[in-house]
Amino acid sequence: MIDLVSFIPRAVVQGIPLLYGSTGETLTEKAGNLNLGIPGVMYVGAISGVIGSFFYEQSGEINGFLAIAIPLLCSLAGSLIMGLIYCFLTVTLRANQNVTGLAMTTFGIGFGNFFGGSLIKLAGSDVPSIALSKTSAYFSHALPFADKLGWFGKIFLSYGFLAYASIAIALVTSRIIRHTRVGLHLRAVGESPTTADAAGINVTRYKYFATCIGCMIAGLGGLYYVMDYACGVWSNDAFGDRGWLAIALVIFTIWRPSIGIFASILFGGLYILYLFIPTGMDHMEIKELYKMIPYVVTLVVLVITSIRSKRENQPPASLGLAYFREER
Image 1 (tube, rainbow, N blue to C red):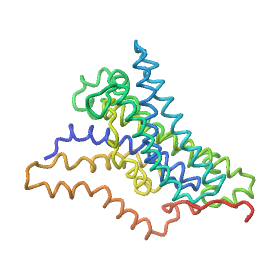
Image 2: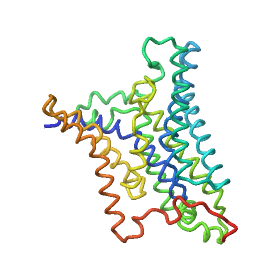
Image 3: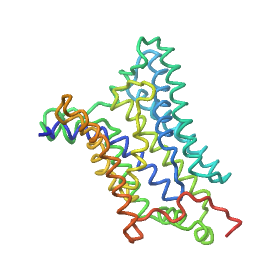
């Protein structure tokens, strides 16, 4: 039997980076941009926060507000730059979105590994990692009364502020997309940019806006992973395939960020489920099968979504297609 009081909090912290990534990608795809560079964006968001935190810790005395603000702003800035690069290539220059996204993933991981390795050398660490424990303590600090509330406190109140922020951002994003004029225009751009342009909607502006904001949200997922989940420890290539799982989660949630809150926890639980099954040599092969579950679930949902004819369960009609105004 799985100890749910131990399992659920670990599933939540595992799923928060996925929630940030999927929320950002959903916002991007609603504008018609298919950003396969989300893994690279999350990586850049993480290393940008690490760079800011590293140099701030080297400066001497730590102030709580600055310990949070500096990595946060650095992460947002790095992710924003990645979003601007993607938009310039795909919206302004009309480059192929699939190729651009994959190139940005490769670039983002290489960027993170280069500067991560440089920081490790600057720190003179004996192991291939650096620990930013002073800054991380502010990010992972839970509510003070969580320990006094038993299982309820451990399951619902034992997380850092970025975990709760991810839920708030997902709910606000869902509200904007479905119930505001900006969201209506955004969905119009994603479904038919030609029609939206004819109606007086600035297609380029909306694509830039949605993609850049989406990248900034996704970058926070990388920052959360390092500062909270990994307790401030950065090591190259430790992020794994979470960026790709975040993109898969967009399909799983049928492009609805509010559903992503529960889906990310589910995916987080499936991602670590193999850690909670019995250990021993006889179960090694079974553990490898458990690691496949998130991807199998995504494939099943993709097949079901493709079969169902309901339009609201389909991706935006112009997703991945460059818009040529001259052809309007």
